[in-house]
Structure formats: C-alpha cells, structure tokens
Image 1 (cartoon, rainbow, N blue to C red):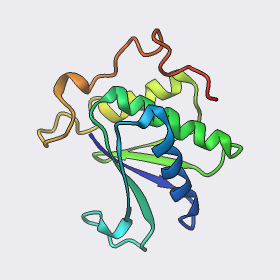
Image 2: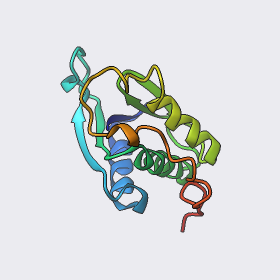
Image 3: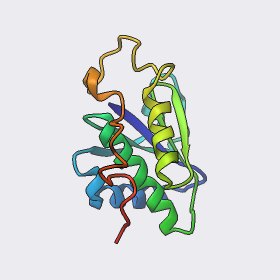
Image 4: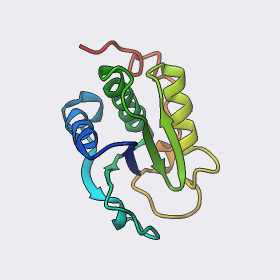
Length: 145
C-alpha cells in the first residue's frame, strides 16, 4: 500500500520533522518512508514542495501510521494540517480518537478508494480491510510515552 503524506503551509521543516517522528515511532516500524518532491508525482507540475512517500504492507499498518501522524500533530499543539492520499482519496488527519482513525482507514481502503481498481498494490486482498479487533487489542488507543 503506497501513500503520500503532505504537511500543509510548510517550508519543508515540519515535513522532515514528521518523517523523523514516524521513523522513530513503533507503530510505523515496518513502513518505508522517503521524502520526494511534489513535481515527481505523475501529472503534476508542482512547486517543489516535498511529500513523504510511504509504503506499508497492510491496512493494520495504515492505522498505526495515521495514529502516529495524529500524535505528532498533538505534540505540536495540533500543529500543521496533514493530509494523506492513497490512490486519489485524500483524508485530513485531525485527531487521535480511535474512531476517527478507523474512519480514515476505511476511507483510504474502502470502496471508491481505488483499492479494487485492479491496479497492483503492495497490500494483499485480505489486508485491505482493517482488522476489527484493533481497538480490542489496544493498538489504536494505547497512550503515548
């Protein structure tokens, strides 16, 4: 599963800080995180604004990634707005509430997200639907230290 993360109204410093945060966060341990210029995205001219290009193995990892982004924003007093895009579906991470995170996961992986458009993706078909037991196992609501 490949995603783009964008920090709005940023000169690049916040995006690099978010990438460092994600690289250290245990919820994103298996993710591949790289910075790239917006102009490298197909079909865009771009102004050189950077994005974090993320590769995850499954939707469970997506929940952890979104939670880590939300926690990063909270660590900055609900800092800059962060958008996450997957196959043309864009969501805004605005809180760390488990229900909000689960809703974002569904939006990014559900019908209309392009997840079933036949385009090859790193996620396996059974990994596209979020595990309903995430909350029961405490994966989305555990406190940060």
